[in-house]
Image 1 (tube, rainbow, N blue to C red):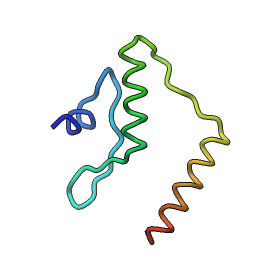
Image 2: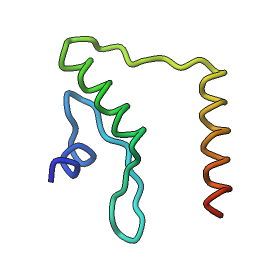
Image 3: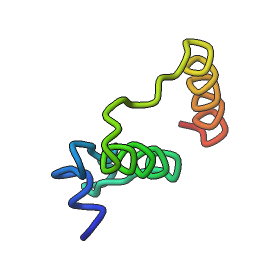
Length: 73
């Protein structure tokens, strides 16, 4: 039920990123970790979200594409 609240409502203004697969909401371990980091920062009064550089963003995209290709998706 807690995961449902995190993606449906939010925690300190932060929503858990999910996708719907087979009618169920799914999330990933990295998404949950990011959610915890940002929600914890928000509860501590830090309103800025961590900023990724373009290089970090591109590396994350490339990694996700490799994982999808391995999974045959």
